[in-house]
Image 1 (cartoon, rainbow, N blue to C red):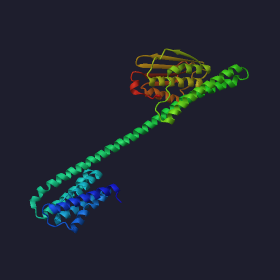
Image 2: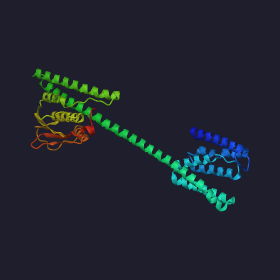
Image 3: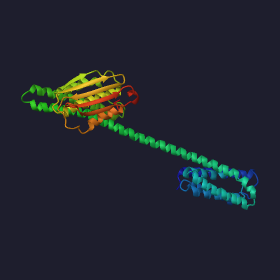
Image 4: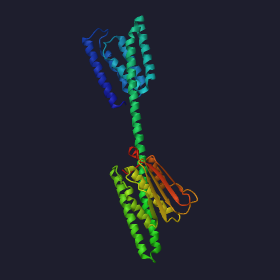
Amino acid sequence: MPPPVDIGIVVALEIFVVGATTGWAHWGGDHVHPLGVPGYALLVAAGLPLLFRRYAPELAFVLSAGLVQTYSIIGYPTGPILLFLLLGLATLSFMRGVTRAAIVAGAVLVGHLVVLLIQGDGLGALPAMVGPTLGTMAVIAGGHAGRMRRGMLAAAQERGVEEGRRRAEEERVRIAREVHDVVAHSLAMINVQAGVAAHVADRRPEQAKEALLAIKEASRVALTDLRATLGVLRSGGDRAPTPGLERLPDLIATAAAAGIEVLVDGVPGDLPAPADVAAYRIMQESLTNVVRHANGATAVTIRFIRSDTLLDIMVRDNGSALPHSPTEGNGLRGMTERASALGGTLTAAPADGGGFEVHATLPLADTLLRGGISDD
């Protein structure tokens, strides 16, 4: 069954064509045969194939054209019966394209020319074909324009869907990175302090108490950050916590509680929000890696070199030399992605003379234009 909208269009067109043709037969010009029951039946039949123009546009147009031609040959009163052909041809061009519509319409026009020649019009039939030919070309062009517009809308919709997928993937990666940064750092510190507390619990209870207090503080900070991040996800908002280098003293204190002395050289200064967040997360991950993985490290040096357009960051520990570069995990990958998102670079490798060094460069001049991957 054709869809209701097609039934409605064809019924409305049938009513208009039959009514207008009846009025023309009563008040209009000359005609060979009166519009009786056979004429009405043929008039209605000419529009019925259009009910199926979506499924078989070629057949619907040819059948409708044949019935219209038959109606004309018999000599029934003229009227807007050609509207059936316009609808059928426009649909054919829209559904199948210009080439197929032109071939089918050309065959119908040739049939019409043959009928005119058979009727004895001779060479006079050629000028009579100019109007139908131009009208056919205009209708095909209109149908093709509609087809092109539909294609552009479909392409735009597809691009929108793809953009939505890309943004969802970026958001998924961002959330994973934020949760990793918060949890990995806090759990690493908790693990170290728990080991210290277990080791000195019997001999030095005061130091064990300090370790437990450090565990309490680290867990409190982790829970606060996680609640803020999960609150954004739950509410569907687009603003997450925005830690920056103003919280660097907290990171230094946490590392110091784990037995790592932190020396800071240079001042980062005021930074654009995306660069500030990226720098903080790089600091956080670097210090976490020192606590968790540095072999015998007792001190870490942090160096900031700031210019108008660039922030250079170096984090280096004094642990034993590593035999090879570490396998890139979520932490190193996350730091690299943060730097790359701002147009910067990041390297992490064993340092000459021992230890491990993280070196990042973050552009500042176009950070606000890029936006970057930030928490806000």
